Length: 151
Image 1 (cartoon, rainbow, N blue to C red):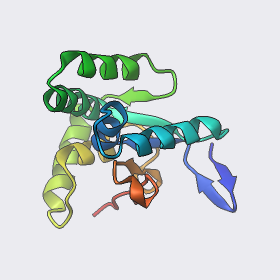
Image 2 (cartoon, rainbow, N blue to C red; image 1 turned 90 degrees about the horizontal axis):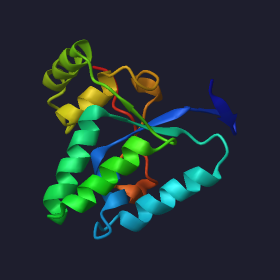
Image 3 (tube, rainbow, N blue to C red; image 1 turned 90 degrees about the vertical axis):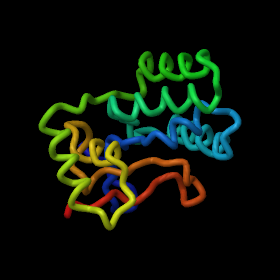
């Protein structure tokens, strides 16, 4: 079910992307404070959308944190925080979603969507693409990016 605010329906979930999660867990990321503030504001908002990520995003986050920080402990702590979180959920990208993501990636060369972005759009997670938002670390625009549209 969706709740309404000012006549607009809010999604129950919001797909988070790798760059947002890296900013959240990397204290040296230029958007770290923005990511933390955004999550705090979500925690204080009753009925705020629940963060959802795909297993591909989880993999990218852990790998990126490991290589940027050069500290296994940083990547391990972030992975553990996500896996043990009651506030977020990980969805698995199955074979059909992976094929659909590949088809979308090939069809939309006009977009700068990564293959992982496409898997997030095609996985069996939050509501269909029109109701999704990819949260990225471009938080200067409010923390949410318009969801990609189907071709």
